[in-house]
Length: 112
Length: 112
Image (cartoon, rainbow over all chains, first blue to last red):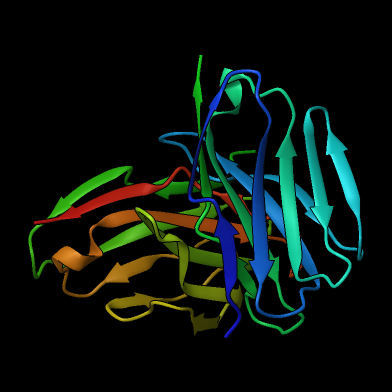
């Protein structure tokens, strides 16, 4: 079945440093979604990428979808303490059913 | 508009007990899913439904049952609780495949 690998599992940064998490799928994706989960909270949708090579920005967050639609990345510029949490990618395959496969997430820990 | 509501928020069960985790959404979404979240494992799909009367198994269905008699409700039943089912359970709903998923607040279940 479809597998979505996400690295790194943990990332410690100093406040103000940049952060990147990477997502790779074993199969071609129809789209990829990104979610953020604050400590003790629930996953919250951030963005969806659909097109090959697509790049989207949300303030300090930049999301990319690879040309082959098998990989994606999330980059945060100048991290702030409010960015703390776990970032998940979720790949959507072209098949039916639920079809949403989550990566294991990257825990972002920020040291002031 | 409450979104996705899960009850209870916390539950402690003894091995062998049964219980039902409740999930309700008021967004008229067709797709509903149950995930479990364990440390280092990300979100794993237990069961999902693509509409009232239609359910199917996800990645880790053993020990759980679901039914979908209405669009709004998607309860998850633990038939005979085991310590391995200690986890945080999230219910999610979305309009259709390829749209963002809305998560409930989660149920933290401990089986002793």
